[in-house]
Amino acid sequence: MINRKAVENSIVLLKFCPTCGTLLGPFEITDILMKGFVCENNHRWNVLLEQVLYKDHTGEWQALEAYPPDPNTKLTPKEIACIWLLRSELRRHLNHQTAHWLRQLLEILDDGCDGLQEQACRDDLFCVLCGKSIIQRSSDDGYVRIYCCTNRHRLFSRGSLWFKLDDGSNMEILSDSLSRFVINNLNMLCEKPMDLVPLQLREVIPQLTEEAKSKGINPIKKKGRI
Image (cartoon, rainbow, N blue to C red; front, side, top):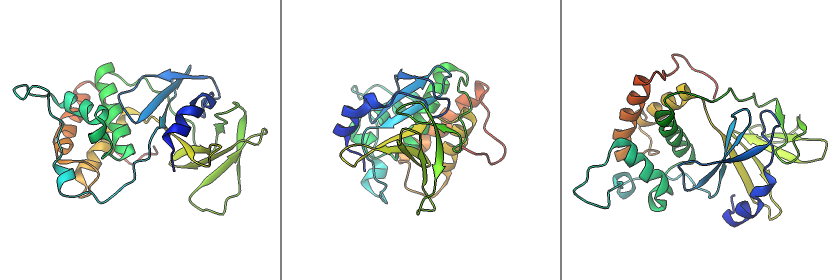
């Protein structure tokens, strides 16, 4: 589980990029429940500040909408997406991965290009606390990988990466995906009969991905690793 107060008090511990081992610095992102970091090689990582547990959301949640302060003003698709990411009463209904990809899509549209570098594979990581290389250790859980550095810091991996804080809670970090994966994943979420994306965003996301394609960011044509 994630304890926001513990994460905020321990955020200074996150110093090194898991991909290349260089120093991390703050990176402003459009998400009220995540804090962004980037290294000198442009590997981007995002710390989760609150736990958002998946539930089978139905009914009223699906009908929630972002709305402008002035009812006579019509929001653009980008403005709607921003409100969902920055208004806490809406953001807390979004699965973290959905919000993560949606925020990246907005950055793609703002930048007009993909400046990300390929992230390292999960077998080649560096300790986020001291920057030393880490090696995989045996694990009783077939779904979770455990890594350890020479300073005995332990890092866990199952989609995201995390390490334990003093109070027993987790600090969890997500790596940014390349643009072509972002577009594919968001379109896939909107097409699936799953309650991960509210109705308003199901309408907005395809418009945003089409805009990204018009800027030269093309989705992958075959399944790839994220």
